[in-house]
Image (cartoon, rainbow, N blue to C red; front, side, top):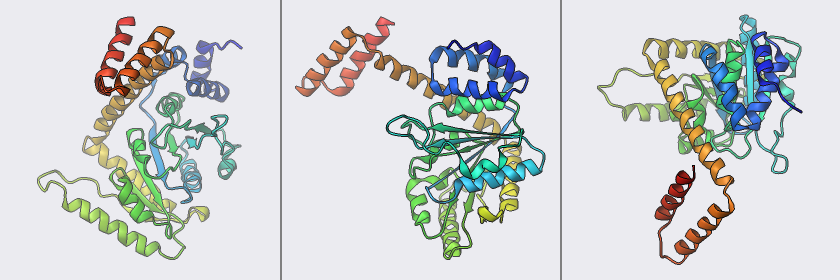
Length: 327
């Protein structure tokens, strides 16, 4: 069925949720021509929403935490869009947790929009389409956008390139302290949340995290200006406990990055990341569309590499040069 992108964009300006949902579907489908048209039209209207990322290992209660934060934002009168990036089905490529059962309490609220998106094998806990989807939600006029990642463990740092404030959620009794240190997740955390803090071991986890943060602080340049010290907040999200403290930490971090100019730098870093990802995806698509001649060239290069007549880097250079000359 033909899709009128201009009509959907007009509907987005009128605040139509159906138009927003259809545009997000087009973004997720990833057709380059439509993506280009959509982003070119909405980009001047973006940059106003506050984007909060929530990441962490599976089982720490990220969805429950997201739901609780959304409820608090609505109590403040702010409109909220939630983008939940779910594990991909190996068969259909679709989101396995698309119903977002824990968030259904908001389904009747016109100022809350919830969208699930499959990661489709993309590393980093996000989907390739996530930054573009965030732009669409931003253009739709939401005050806050919450991006909840897959929770794949050691590849979650990509969320920092998308969010203004990154929350790393952990839980006691799951080895999260050691896991976070190994994964480098603490380096991207703006706020550390120990969820399910009514369990035993919450205090020990807080001490471990504090020690890791202090160790990292000692390695910083003593002549550098004071940076942000990630607060450690304990929550029991299923009961709403500690959510006020999480919101205060988000507000404090927002004020910090505004006053220090870090917000502008994050915007530039986000632009660099997005441009690089689009360029890489364009190259991937070109390889996926290799014609018979290019495929034969690739096979010939592979034969030479396997025979040790050519190294793989030189072979890649030859193939890229051939693709460039072919346009």
